[in-house]
Length: 93
Picture (cartoon, rainbow, N blue to C red):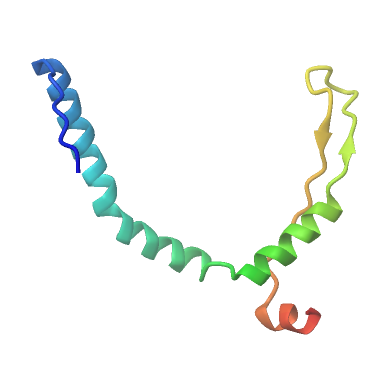
């Protein structure tokens, strides 16, 4: 492993310390944030669920023209999708 030396002034050192402290706060909050996310949204999607969803979105999306607003020359239609139950996915495979 190479050792590198970086020469910094007090202001830069203070900025580096502040960034490291902020990073540490985020790292410390990760387990709590993850627990809240799992409580609110359930378990993560499986690979087969993601594949099924991506195929559905690819089929449902089509470009349309927005003539009401000239700022948006082209927009994409978005499909609202609910997360399918695992049993429904297994049945369709």
